Length: 287
Image (cartoon, one colour):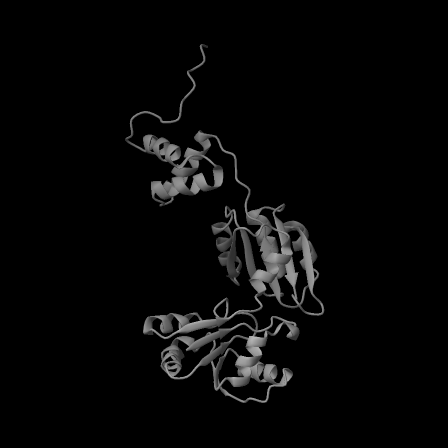
């Protein structure tokens, strides 16, 4: 069996009783960084010294099959350096291989930087999306932000402190300077800080330099109010860029509140070769 175990994201006091029991009895642990796991065992006063196997982004695909076979006969405890394995950490490919091979996977729940940042942000929590780390390069980052510019759910990102200021500037440019943003720094640690403001305000704040582990929580886009003619124009623009008409109509409908069927039929009537406009036109003025 494979056991995914969440470890503290900062405060050692967040260790669960179940995790302590698992660490005390484990015979094999697959760890993102074995040195971090050794430190955790010592910090908790656990004398057990299990076999430690390194499992990180660069070797997981290669080791997955071997570890799955090991887990058929031995409980394999899987740890990332902090938080839940598989969530922007190693473990996904291992779980994928285990599921395919029919090996049981279970979880010891615990701390999560994603949920902690979301909960403390003060932004809507009923619907949200986790976007992981933003791309390192400016152009790729801008493209990634354009893809979520109309996302109406609250969004959670991870970011390096060295790139935080640049990412917030890009976010302000693509999503709007007034978009509500919360930067969560060093969650659960002694120097925990939660900074709230607009994208522009926090970009200016971050320009002075920020240290620590960073999570960015971004408010979803407000629904835009469009008239049918403008909505159809946006649908046709997406179609011209290569999107399918049905998908473009659904996309514009989701962010505008206009009916998907209305957009589809009106845009279909305006495509080259269609008969007559679907959007009512005003008669010409009598002069």
